[in-house]
Image (cartoon, rainbow, N blue to C red; front, side, top):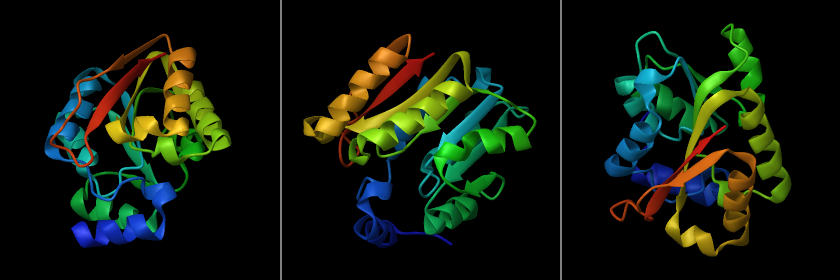
Length: 193
């Protein structure tokens, strides 16, 4: 099942709080996210909210062949779109808060890297806190969370709150350049535990 741009827009209009954007990320943002993740060095990688599989495709290209990798997507149509785009990827249809369950199914109790496309700016405070606690608890010491935010969303109080929580929770948080070619323009956060 391939979701074109109109299918993506339909998903956004149906549930903007779980989709977060009207269009999928572009090639330049995908490159920036996956480069920040240093995938060839990671033994265990989890992707949260792969959408249509734009980042998933890049992760599969760049990760080490021995790396344990799976994705978790709550939206059933996006889940199927990612599986269709990346048939070799393991994609679970579930909430990101159940990440530990899937790590344990694969014989792991923690991971080296989490790549998140979750729409942090639209999540309420409780959801932000709950998901960041799950991420923090499954990351190994020295582990990294890579996520991105839209430049325009920094006017939204929940986006500013998320940035503040990241800086308070993680040892190091680095913000990338803005990818102006993405719609909407976006930048990447690299947060290290």
